[in-house]
Amino acid sequence: MNQSPSPLSGALTLSSNHFSSFLTALTPDRFREVVHEVECKLRIVNQTLSLLDMQGFDSILDEMLNSITEKTGELLSADRTTIYLLDEARNELYTTVIGNNGRSREIRIPTDQGIAGEVAQTLKPVNIPFDFFDDPRSQQAKQQYEKTGYRTYTMLTLPLLSDKGELVAVIQLINKLSLENSPMDALENRIDYAGFSSSDETIFREFTPCIRLILESSRSFYIAAQRQRAAQALMKATQSLSQSRLDLGETLKRVMTEAKQLMHADRST
Image 1 (cartoon, one colour):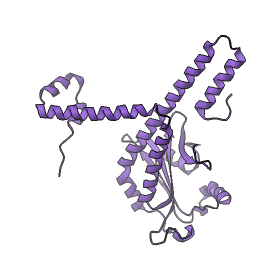
Image 2 (spheres, helix red, strand yellow):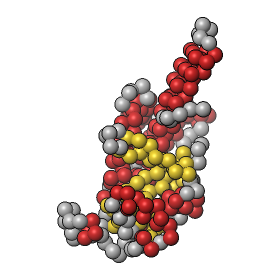
Image 3 (cartoon, helix red, strand yellow):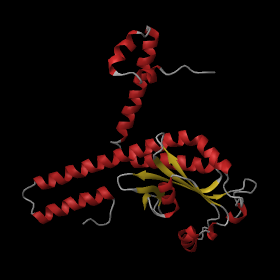
Image 4 (tube, one colour):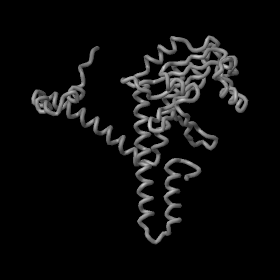
């Protein structure tokens, strides 16, 4: 059953000069529909903005990313999946992982390093079949294998692009699994040695609009949160500078403390 276009979406395509004529042409019932939809949209926007004032904002963002990461891996039968969002300002890819203390921590890599960086630069998928360790780009994975005991057999790394063809994120899927084996079996017995296929890439493209919407929202929330932290740090630093009774050394110490909190760094220079 075909659905009629949203009245709000139609309204948004009109210039401000034609907005009054748009309203004039609406019947009372259609006008109520438009008003109701606008109210719903604004309610969502206000709820989203209110999240910026919540201490649990980071956990909400992590939950969004973790959920879409898990779903993407499930769709393509990958044992492990990582989604790297693009930080255009710093020219880096970043993701969050859960540390040993149960808290999330951020991992960043330059956009010109590793297989994820290669995909970020070329905007083309990289599909490495079994045996991944035979590929010259597997050096880092081999080092991780020695440290953790987790082996990479196959890998598919995909770019996620915006409607304009610009990079939004890089999705990296590791170890294509055979659905015939039990999840309780050892990893080596669950590997689909045929690796990721062109069908997997087709499935990914099919779900790209949904994945992109969630990731673009997540990235927007992340940027908003960073700006809020920057504003808070600037306010605290300004307060320190305004306290004339403090000597210069103490003032600089306070400013550096706020800078460290903002950047989540161990040191600030």
